[in-house]
Length: 128
Image 1: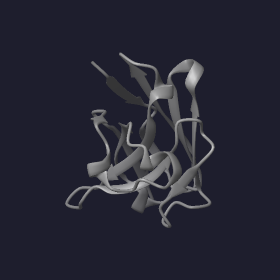
Image 2: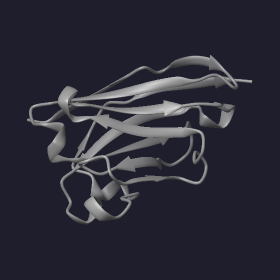
Image 3: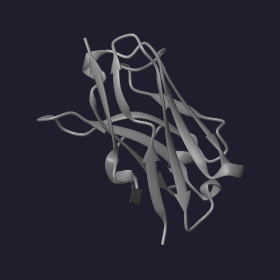
Image 4: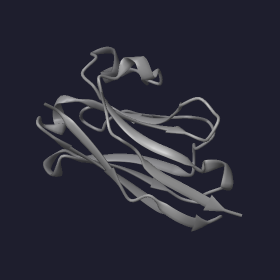
């Protein structure tokens, strides 16, 4: 059974930074392309960023491009999301997800339906 657990969320002021982590257990992280999604209160879940198995390809939503960086350490079975210059509109529950879909190896996978496994999420709150 594959399990994903997020950590690193919190309450910060606008302009601050946070680093989220997603630790995978039950199977090697290297088996999966990984993504980050977020959902703000009253809004639909939205794609944030994804990274392929090797870390050689990344893809970002326009709203976070240049501020967020996705990375992974397969040896530690952990994926990261470095979030800089945080804005109040970044406030949401952030969830990581895993997919073995071959197409995600070469192209950005921004549809939630492409992912097979999900974490419970971690809250990020950015105050103005």
